[in-house]
Image (cartoon, rainbow, N blue to C red; front, side):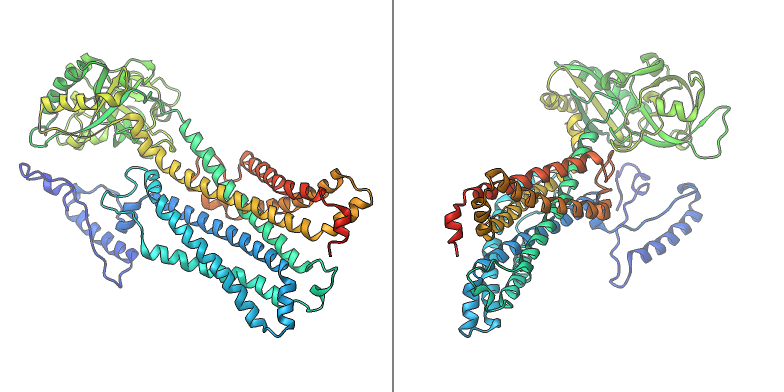
Length: 610
């Protein structure tokens, strides 16, 4: 399918193509890629002038192309959901074990009166299944209610507009099935433990429960803490990465800047002269709009740079390719975007009017291609202009050096870049013209006025989209990491709540089981501080064991977050220390209430408890 089509230009329909193909069921994409690569090589031999010397061909599934980099975030979130499910299962199993312990005399009496072990197991599993079914039903209701909120969180342009995100029956059924399956699996252990008890021990008046069962509960709590540690670490790393990304210096001042892309009809603005004429008429009209401080036009599509090309420097030999970007622009671009001058001078109206072959380069180009030499006055060759639709002299004199502007996204380093007068280089293609407008007030308020000015000059030039530069950066750079951060943080917070519930339930059960022992300690002279310290130390011990296990688990699998974080290592000490502190505080808080309850035990009552 032609990427662009203009019936007035016979060549326009066969310059750029997007190729789609449906693979045979038996054909692997890699095998198809190998075949297409062979075909491309044959075409390259036939049409030598149409292909670069070195190129490669890739076959990419359309679904992967549509989802793009969001797939990494989705897989990470799927893993987070799985970890959260394990924490919830461990918590439910813990509560079921505690519940089974309180009913052990009842269950043993049933066994003694003739009930089979299979019937006891069946009864407990059915109870667990009913609990899971009720919880899953409520969860589905919450999911349906929160679907709109999730859609609102999705970054713009994450999925095509044709994609419909709505309630999905197979997904809901799968959710119910997972809930039921986990209920059977994690309800089976307490059921088996309850049905295998010695019939004599629970009937003794002094029985205090099974040590094996207590050990299992503590192992479950340790597992919960370990899994929660990983979730909190992931959320912390994503948070630090996001804040570091937002703090990156872009090399421009994006506030109060309005950006719009202009689609110039090819039949009317095919050559450089026609594009120059349009821009020279447009900028004064835009500048006369009340509230506009300055306006500029450029090929630059921030923060992704301009047109890629190779460079050469007169008198300098090099073995490797010197690559970078060129940005044909008007002289007002530096003022509009607040790009700082470091050496020499900027482009001027005289350079534009006289079509001088001059260039302003960024610091990255000055340091990489000129080293310690002063680049001012050197001749720079721009290879892409040799093969342009209007071939021209590719040599430009370097007249200035400016600060680096991010041209490969916020996370990547800056590549060498040269700013050229648009009257010499043109814009390379009508779809590449971008209009930057700096305003005194809110830039969004001038979007309608800007569109009116453009259509007033030429009704066939339709703005492809008018956004503030802050919105463009938000959509292209910050929205996806923020989306992953929010969802991962929500999962981590839920996991933390489940851990606190798990620690609380275990400590409460411990207090209930040790009620007689605590009463004896108090009767023998133990004070409130001693009892509370004993229980807090016990709760903290299990939390610290879980943290230690979580650190080992994090070091084993945290590399899966490497594609989602930036500017911080996956073993960041500050993040790990923060998570340790948070979990320790939560563990102490969850143990505190049971310890307070233990200090209120009346020794006389506890000694008569059983």
